[in-house]
Image (cartoon, rainbow, N blue to C red; front, side, top):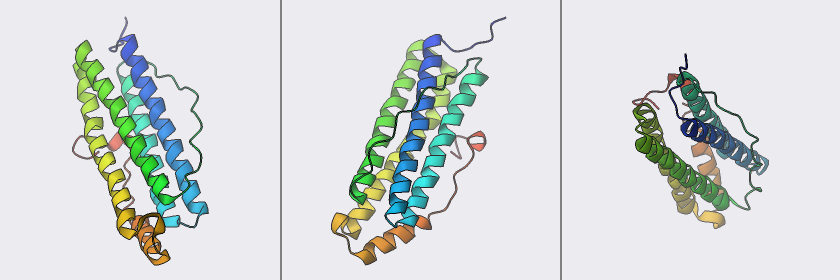
Length: 183
């Protein structure tokens, strides 16, 4: 008996998004290494935690496809972009990536609606909400850096920003424990 509850096109689209989340994890890991190398251990720690969160998102997609009777496909992950030239470029890259990811999430929601795949549509609502939070977080990084003085910030301002991000709670939940109320 065939127990697969996803169309082939939806299975592929969800697998593609799983791989996109893995790529995001690599991007944030790469940015974290860059920040660490520049002496911004707090910012690096923040980016490392964000990399783990993106990996958790990929696992959430993987588990969903498996639970719906499909088999996700792991593809080759493209290399992350070149190191940013500045903290502004780093934070702008984080924001651009999140906006791009939101666009991909919305495409999946549209696809689920077109296919009348209500289970996937419902599953995707968690990611719609998550992307609101991700874009807000990325935007606030840009704002905090601007307040500190942007790329011309004083060492003292950058030190304070670095410490602020280092002390941001490390509350990245496991994908298996995430719910709509507690992403």
